[in-house]
Length: 111
Length: 115
Image (cartoon, rainbow over all chains, first blue to last red; front, side):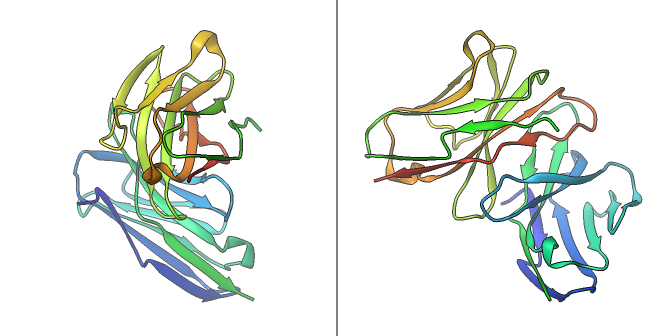
């Protein structure tokens, strides 16, 4: 069983719309979470991290963490065509230096 | 900003041959990683490396795989011999420390095609 699950597998939103991506961990030892974005033909790049319960906002991006339910989400407001990419949720356990990635959500923002 | 460089960007070899993938990590980073990605899907952890040693490795890190960073030069992933199922994009990453909120920085990947 995958340690980090993501949904949906793919998502299409109109330009200017809101995109919501979800991630659930199956292991309560995960303490640190990141969202990575990967454009086609490139390596993944860290978008933002979240380690505490609640919301964290960075520009158009808002991450939410609920440690009790092991649920992390990413919301992108005012989506742009340049946001079209593969988004990964990644999680790490405390004092353990392995980043586990989810299976990814392919986001398409239609002009 | 700082970058992780991977050389070459694409490597084509025959099954059974040896291949070495090279990674030039960020200069002040201490932890190094290799990940494998097939068909633009999930990033699978292979191995991490610190202070000249393998710290953790996954089941995907087969006996045919090895990593090293001789004298602070390239961090390398060697596969000997290669198999068809080794065809994938291999990403190198580095991070300054193990603790804290520093996310590993990834390179652009090396696409390995085993024929």
